[in-house]
Length: 323
Image (cartoon, rainbow, N blue to C red):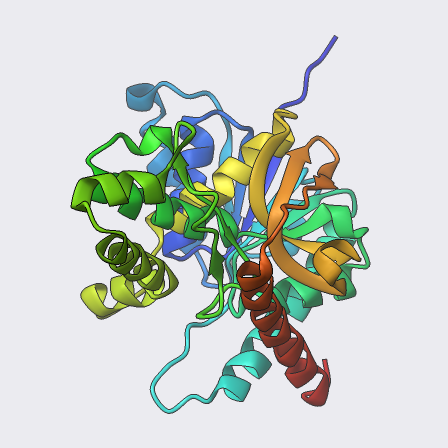
């Protein structure tokens, strides 16, 4: 009996795409096809990674391609295609440019990988996931966005550094849209079940100081992407977004049923109907298999509503632009 390895197609061969290809190979998640419109670039990147296969000990096939035919039959597709905002470019300019790119990508995916599961990383995320689902016509459980895994990892990292504990034992989650209105759930953040706020109060001996420290970590989480951009000066984060998307892909490929914050299509959950918003979901062989509803208090719900409204405004702006 012949066994077929899963095929992972990566749309966009930039910094994130290259790391995605390497991580897919290192974890032996499946054969990799890296697509980019820049001639020879994805071929060069995949050849470079493949030539380390003996050193790193992986047996998967890596190929670069400049045509959508190269992603034919892919099981999982991760989309990073799109441009960051440049000086002088308005929000509408960015929306228009990336919406056109995502529309083209969606059409290629629909033609050559009609049974695939799609994870979108491209920004502005909530809008781009919405477009991807619209133009592929795929069921909503097969189209999702990566943001919450990354935002939650950042939040968890800041907590671990503050408390001097292993980040492996920190559980912290971020909901809502991917932007300044994201909602880090402070009340649920814990270190192996021990509430983070309790630990901060014990560390500082003062509730006001503990709240001040937590507020600073929440704000840093919301601005974390910009912090990296400011330091790099010529680019944006790529290691952490790639790792976050791979965690989602691995959960689907291996049917791990991990509970991960995901930009998923809501149909009444959290009081939202018909929009993609970041919420905890069960990711398994059927993609978004279940949306988990967390009880929010009045303050958390208010923050969630603000974040959802930001997503709605973004989608409305796309509609005005003809998408």
